[in-house]
Length: 102
Image (cartoon, rainbow, N blue to C red; front, side, top):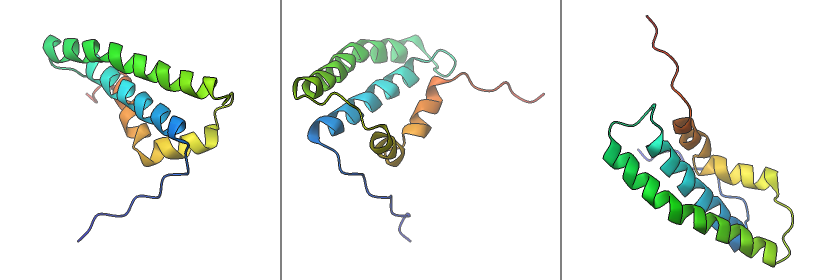
């Protein structure tokens, strides 16, 4: 049996696609650094080191958009893209987990 098909990504410019990709990369790294969810310092250190490069790439994606005159972010379209790409699931790793039931 095949897994359910994901909804299609909305039409994005290349710059918007780069923005979404770089944003999710940063989110993934921050999730790996989250002290409430990580197991060791080494994996957190590696994620923090990678974060510098990914944050720079995110800045560069936004710079390209700004230089092209794209002064607005189309939140509804970008939100749909984030949902299709698992943005809600990925951002949950940034939060502090709920306390266990006793």
